Length: 217
Image (cartoon, rainbow, N blue to C red; front, side):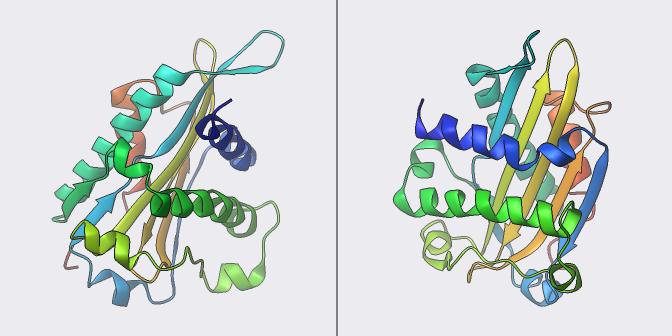
């Protein structure tokens, strides 16, 4: 099993408690408006999205081709939504994603994503995190500078399906140069969205980012 596939398997377990229900929400850093107003160019990483087939015995089979297609569609959809909000967008390609710097950032984000879901959405809420949403990935200024950007966008997603989706979720985070997550959106609704279709994934991305402000607002 490759490192990437192990990452996808770990990531799908992270959001398991939200993936079987309908949920939509966002979390903002206490100083979100201050950080947000300095962002004009966003570097959108390739999302980590895992598509799994539900087998009759209850086990799940990772769908490599469908997952890669979902990742491409999600990145394009995120970029399109940001452009509609008057941001300029740089998209990381698969080669760029293999750099040691980005591998470290995406690995840490998996763990942070798990903490955000557990402690600000449930089932183990931390009052301090609910009162002040503060999560950090470490400085990313050098990464952003190399791509002429001033904001970083990461996304994780999961879907389990047989004939129809039975579980899915998508999380999107926006990070400022010092590594603070200033905005985080989480959406999951297997009745409305299907990550295996471009239309369904586009709709899920749009719904997840619905409350993220326009550039300059």
